[in-house]
Amino acid sequence: MVKAESVCKDFGALKVLKGITLEVPKGQVLVLVGPSGSGKSTFLRCINHLETVTAGRLYVDGELVGYQERGGKLHEMRPKDVAKQRREVGMVFQHFNLFPHRTALENIVEAPLHVKKVKKDEAIERGRDLLKQVGLADKADAYPAQLSGGQQQRVAIARALAMNPKLMLFDEPTSALDPELVGEVLSVMKKLAEEGMTMVVVTHEMGFAREVANELVFMDGGVVVERGAPRDVLSNPSHERTKAFLSKVL
Image (tube, rainbow, N blue to C red; front, side, top):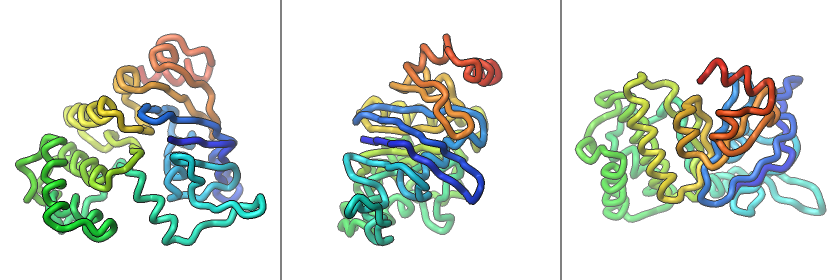
């Protein structure tokens, strides 16, 4: 579902990604961990072309992301075509980014109505179904300010799912939440994984990584330092840098 080949990203003189090569098979969960500034979120943003790559290639479901190849050269796609590609990928951010002036249900149906031109009745029915799936059936008419952080994040997940994405990206979805609200968001993500959704998750929740991920990748300084089965990497890391990081977070 995701294939990254030697992906590099520079911001001016700052090299944030230095040749990331990874694959995420369909229906699998990849968890990215590492210290702040290691390039995890930047890599995530490159997957749906919120950031352009400086070098290398990224594919989602076999399609080159953000570029077309002509005569061995890459040409950036028109914004309209990039937006079309992006519809296939759901993204959940650290801060929920809900429209404050729209109810939970209105937030969820907005994109299907205006981007996918889904009929209003259908969009509303699907929106209510998604709210039920994330445990918020009774909050359809609540505004974001009336919801807890955990509830807002669950609405954000439902909103991403409303576009029927083939891939879900999560950028530290629980780091802005109070500790007691973290579990309710992780349980929604766990359920998604059980249903076969392909997911790439940047998180510091090592318990979630151990339980749900198929592969754990430890990044530092813009490179993949270590990767493997989560239980193996967490209980018996082979790289000194991984050991040092895990000793602080576990």
